[in-house]
Image (cartoon, rainbow, N blue to C red):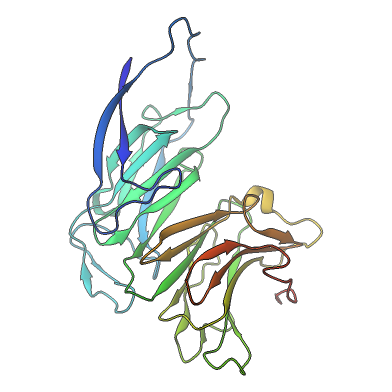
Length: 302
């Protein structure tokens, strides 16, 4: 068999990276079944791929010794290490590399194209941050891509991070947040209204050039339901581009870790709007949206 390395205790296939601690890597030996036909030859990708690790809160690059936003205060945290990029094919690590000063270029001969042309899974880990995860990673399919990492959250806080692919150019995150006074109307944070409930819910970053991240942070949860939906800005409701978007929303919670939901896999689509998840304000637990859990709201304005 061929010796490969897999991540134990790290976020992959539903298992979460340990937050703020180094991942433990262990080895196993996996080989083809006796008499199994050899796998088809893999082709090389046409271009190198340069990946940048960035802070999901402000979009700034992350690297060893750099001052970074800790989620509350700008430039308040000095990064102790460079990020590390892991690329998986199933449980097998096919690439592992340090992102020196927050960046790494993966060469065409370092990762080969799969026979079915499907994507790999990417995990980016850095001490002091919550790990980034995508099982539809665009590494090698795009020349440049960004990996947003969330600062570790304080107890009782939460964060939602939206990322997507090459198309469409602009997606927008909306978070409907209940008021602490149940008699008051809920407030929806978005690119027009960047704060709600006296700043307890805020839009940290709005991206209009593609890929994201777009990030909403919560300093506390009120009783009631928090609903996340994503709008394709200036999209055609009759011909939305969700099937091309590879859109993903990651919900970060101190006691739950990172929960990922992908368009077409969780939630439901109503025209140009993807209704993603509902988070219970008492338990902080998320559920994928259904029309019953997350009733359709008026479409956002351009």
